[in-house]
Length: 178
Image (cartoon, rainbow, N blue to C red; front, side, top):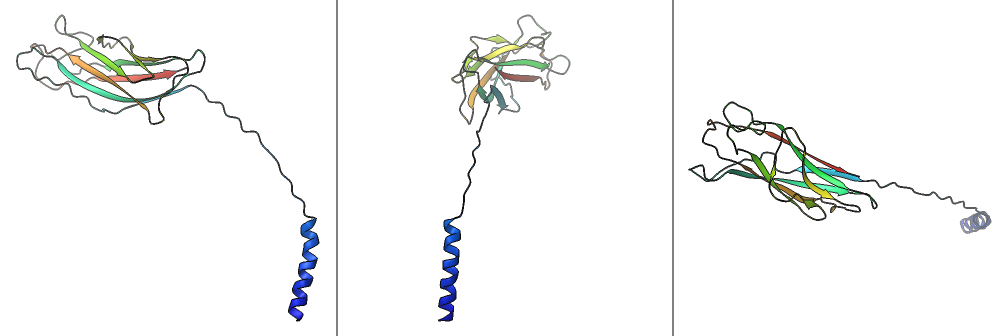
């Protein structure tokens, strides 16, 4: 009985305190600035250029795949994807982007850029001295969260004057957004 009375007394003492308890709340305003952004991943680390010809009739070809991520401004926004051969084919007697060994030798490419991008049109000539266009975006463009696909299909003439051996060049891709 004593325990019952003590519990009842404690409950009666606590009830007024709970009834008179105060609460307080506060708020905050969240603010975020979402800006233009661009990024890319070159998914083909090494692009091998090969030919099936045994009579110099077909060029060396290969494809470099990329994934791009972009968001441009809603008004007046734009984006560009460019490439430049930043290191010419190394070695003596092989192909060269800057100084081809024969007239007509060239490293060319065609571009593919999935929507919302617009790919370059026709065959482009790669350069070691100039940055060349690859793809463009207009205002309010955005890629998928996982990125969108792009690719470069390379073509290098197969000239019989090329000395046998392995030659490598480096191409740098750059993406930008406003």
